[in-house]
Amino acid sequence: MPSGPFARPPDLDRGSRTSVHRQIERWLTEAIDGGELRPDDRLPTESVLAQFFGVSRMTLRQALAVLAERGVLLRRRGRGGGTFVARPLIDCDLTGFIEQLRRANLSAQARVVSATTTEPSGAVAVALGIEGDQRVHRVVRVRSSDGDPLALEHSYFPADLFPDLLRLPLTGSLYALLAQRYDRQPATAKESLRPVIADASTATLLGATPGAALLLVQRVASTAAGLPVEFARDVFRPDRVRITVRSEWTGRRD
Image 1 (cartoon, rainbow, N blue to C red):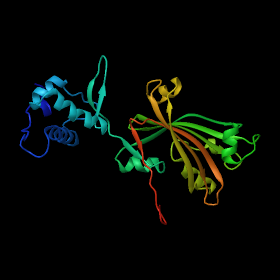
Image 2 (cartoon, rainbow, N blue to C red):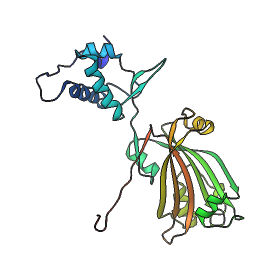
Image 3 (cartoon, rainbow, N blue to C red):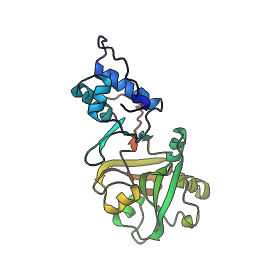
Image 4 (tube, helix red, strand yellow):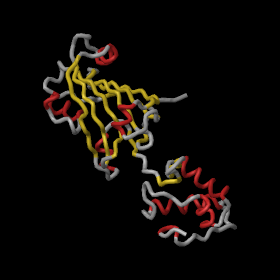
């Protein structure tokens, strides 16, 4: 029998109102929360675990399935597969990305892939409310936490509103730059979300598999006066980031 947290089996209470598979879920969750099992640790095989807990493989699979559905465990098939402790999801509400990582005790990095000034596509021009012959700054960055890629950002800014933007440091908060250097702080955003499939280049930048499911967040950010200052297409890894949406109801909702 493996050492560490699996050196001594727990005493499962088969007379309890809490089912055995729920007790196994709780035991594994506490082992993860307590640091005895860490992200990317591989669990013993189902047969070994079933023997360890003294249960049938069907009961064990119930517990593992629930934890996998909750994102606590990750099941992989094929050679090198098995059951692994998943890395915790990072909650992101699409604003204050760096600050949210700091609150989670995670370091945030931004790597600039490219930064160019170019003519906008039709969709970008419409989103920013500019003419097609006006130019935009296009900034592509990979956002990471502790070296783990989380998102690929494509951001477009009207060049007339933000001269010399590309000469400034672009590895920190771009919104802070807009506010501090140009006095044009984004105050509102209209966003849409949809699933997409990772192409080869995106997969390489995000450390994902080509064809993997990703989450695209498309955004138009505007100042308090309603002036569009950014059009963005951000692609997130859903295995590492969980998007949260907060709503406030100011009146009756039928």
